[in-house]
Length: 409
Image 1 (tube, rainbow, N blue to C red):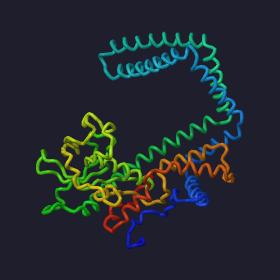
Image 2 (image 1 turned 60 degrees about the vertical axis):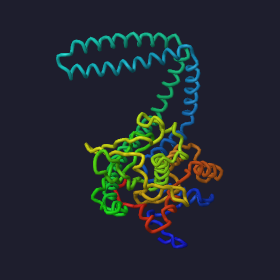
Image 3 (image 1 turned 180 degrees about the vertical axis):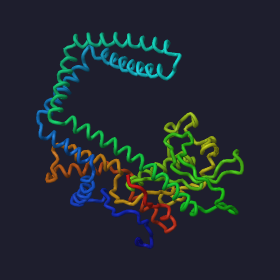
Image 4 (image 1 turned 135 degrees about the vertical axis):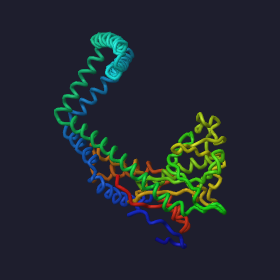
């Protein structure tokens, strides 16, 4: 795709509808596209079922308010602090008893001392339980809280809300596991793309080829807030020589997260290149870098191979004079998709708000207007369309933003 004035932009999306640029009718259209996606999402649909159950049960809110008020009264009571301590002691004892019981089976010949420790915890557990029971009986506030809780639990079970909430938790957990598996698959695709495409784009040092290039994964360097997905380096002649960083690669499965990934790498590169005007050293202090500056060598290990990084390792990275961002040498890999002008996590927050809003009415103009303002308040300083424009200044730079087809997730 060619832009005016001969600029080029990477074609990496099905469509772009940037929330930040929309008027109210445009937001209606934007929201309609979101509903098309949400209606295929089991988590969103389950949230709507829970919302409908709550709508149909006005007594639920009364019981929830009563439980909330009873909790506030109980928290101000004289027995609250000690009961809280006892709850924690009992929970810790439960863990210790379970661990010692497992150890008895795992370490034959040591049963006697382990059993003695377990019996000691069991005795303490009984004492704490007895004290807890006595305090509860002597506390009208705690008894009222228990009655309010039990009544709420019974009512939620009667209307099926407890099962609906359990199903929502199951779907969310299953989705997290699937996303984790897809993330691993995408990491492999990103590494292959780096090896097959990005390495060939890097200008080699004079008189040298790409034979000395190495691709490193999840580079942290003992620094705060840094985990570089992939880093292409040229290793020194010996382990005592620092590497030269030739490319930093940020991989995002969701195209709408490209903007936030880009912005985080800008902060990282500012620190790694020693631009002390761009960060607060107090936020970067670690055991490896007690001054909060990248002012000493550190080692990254890939398997059993050490790679030494010095402050000079990132000397190739300089800010673009026009935009002020680090562009050359920073590559981004993502999957194709529609660009909405907010991150995937924000899209999830918007979906959750709509699914859980018991007063939701798409025909209510005032409610839609309030939702529009709230959604726009969640937009970041840099979103994916901004990155697309930054990398569109030349055909060569546009090649640094790469779209790959990878397993969905």
